[in-house]
Image 1: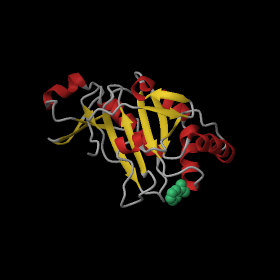
Image 2: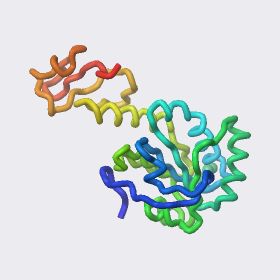
Image 3: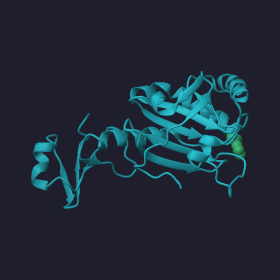
Image 4: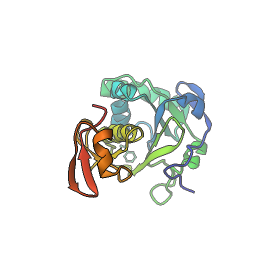
Length: 211
Ligand code: BEZ
C-alpha cells in the first residue's frame, strides 16, 4: 500500500555511493529528503541531482539530509556522479542508493507500472526527525522537480511544527502566516505579539513569529 502522510518512513539497509546505510540510523535527528530518479546518465536526472548538490547549504541550514535512489547499480551511480559534477559544476556529496533488485523502490512504491515497468518515477519523501512522512510528491519522468518548492515546504513544516500557524498559498519564508483555528481570537495578542489582522473570523494573519 502507498505510504501516506503521518506514516513511519519504512527502515531499510542499502548499498549507497557512500557505503552501506541503515536508513533510520543515517537520518539520525535530521530531517530527510529521499528522492527517486528514473535512471542514471539521463539529462533531467543529471540536472536534478546537480541542483540538490548545489543546494547543500540551504539543506544544511534547515538540518536536512538528502539521499537519492534509482534501480541502477552502484558502479553506474559512481561513474555518473563524475558527469554530474562536471556538467553541473558541483560536487555530489550525498549518497545515492543502488537498488537493482528494487527492494527499496518497492517498499516506497516508487515504481508505477502504468508509467514505467522498469524505472522509478520521480518521487519525493520529506521525513521529519520523528521518522514520520511529512510530504510526498510524484512527478513524471519528463518533468524535473522544483527544489525551491521542496525547501519552501520544509520551511513551512518546520515553522508549523513549532507555532500554531499555517502558511497560505505561495507563502515564502518571511511573509505573514495564518493563525490556526485552535487559537481563540482573544488569545492572539498574547501568543502573537507582533500584531494580527482579522480578515474574516476564520482567516487571521500575523507576521511570521520566528523572524
Ligand atoms: C531524464 O532524466 O532526462 C529522463 C529519464 C527518464 C525518462 C525521461 C527523461
